[in-house]
Image 1 (cartoon, rainbow over the protein chains, first blue to last red):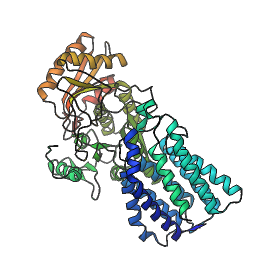
Image 2 (cartoon, chains in turn green, orange):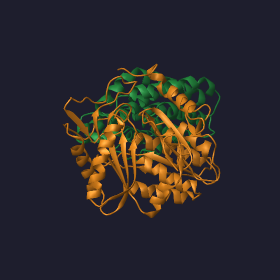
Image 3 (cartoon, helix red, strand yellow):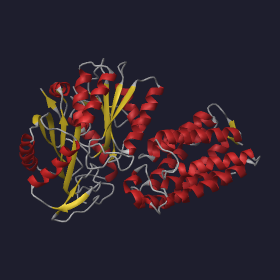
Image 4 (cartoon, each protein chain N blue to C red):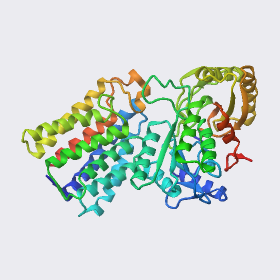
Amino acid sequence: MTDSAKLIEVLGNVKDAIDANAEYLTDLDAAIGDSDHGINLARGFRKVAEDLPAMAGKDIGAILKKTGMDLVSTVGGSSGPLYGTAFMKAGASAAGKSEINTEDFLNMFSAAIGGVKMRGKSEEGEKTMLDAMGPALRAAEEAAAAGKSAKEMLEAAAEAAAEGAAFTKTIIATKGRAAYLGERSLGHVDPGAASFAVIMKTVAESY
Amino acid sequence: MKKLINAADQVEEQMIEGIRKAWPQYLKRVEGTDVLVRAAKKEGKVALVSGGGSGHEPAHAGYVGKGMLDAAVPGAVFTSPTPDQVYEAIQAVAGEEGVLLIIKNYTGDVMNFEMAADMARDEGIRVEQVIVDDDVAVDGSLYTVGRRGVAGTVFVHKIAGALAERGASLEEVKAVAEKVIANVRSMSMAISPCTVPAAGKPGFELGEEEMEIGIGIHGEPGTHREPMAGADEIVDKLLSKILADLDFDGREAALLINGCGGTPLMELFIVNNHVQDVLTERGIKVHKTLVGNYMTSLEMQGFSISLLKLDDEMKELLDDPADTPAYREV
């Protein structure tokens, strides 16, 4: 499904997509947070992209671990540790592999979500990035079980992530800074769920 | 915005260097990081690491020294330090006895420090943590994020620091830190806001005749706004909230009247004058009083009251010697 060179290409595309959506994500954050999600995430992925050339030839686990470390050390706030943990856990799950198949991908994705739940002490339904990640994983698992191609699997995940992000509009935040707003968080899309939907869409479009 | 700075994106770096150059007898910078550690590492004890956003000076670097912290990790203004920085601090001070992280309860701080703790544990370092949540302005039961950590954190540094200095185990130091957290309550107010250099405008605006009650330490708005009142009346308001939250009557206590950065000491003493009278009336004996800028919010004008209910152990540890830039006990 993917080798190290392809992963480096995909991560570069993610950087471009986050850059292009930085203002949109920051605007979402202004409504229910502290208006820096897009700015912070763009800074993080710029650092990731900067370090990608030196990752050529490294295994997939090492590249993802480095990506996670870069995000953790540059993004700040709570999205830094959350996305950082997600990439590091995915990396640990792919340690030593220079190529991954569909099954590896699903295991990595599942490990990443487990990391976000652990780090954020959160579950789905609390108006966080998990509300985009959970449905995306389930859609990918279904597609894989139905024998779909890798591209079809990623497209299904991207679509489910977008739907999950839209769903966060309808629920009240109980985690993160938006939780201080209580019911006033209704009607707004969670910025973390939105940024994950952007990332998932970019990954799918890279295949 | 009028500030004594050079450039908004340089404030943290230039402040850290200024701190290092001011207090070389107490602390030094870990090369290539923002971490400040004791000038002479004390071996054979549990190491205490704390930190948080910058803008709270003298917290936290001012409490690095004998009888208090071993390392302080400053982040960007009002922003948690990142895990790699906290990890560097842990690595710099860790010994066989282990490390205790003292974290204030904010989502970002907790995540970044916990992540650093995980990284250190992966390296075989013993790390425990406590989370300070002393602010009674925020209703802890309303949502799951809980109460904020504010100026009461200074008492955690002092008492846990004293026990660590005596050579107690990591479990014992953690237990006494948790005891302090369970017995300290704080409440604050502001009469003028503060401006984060990078933001360029204040976190909230107040009219001439208004005050903000229940503020945090990051220039964020408080729980509500009221017409300005006299100092004694404001003290009654804040104290009643603290005393309603925990029963102090007939007990000994430690008191911190904390300035938010822009409040004259004269006004803090006027506040203290009435606080002491009210506590005496309630039969609360004040064992120790601190008045000054211990946990600030840049140039904010305002103050907080922190009250710690003491037992014999905490009382003794509070009286133990401490020698740091911002807290001395002889």
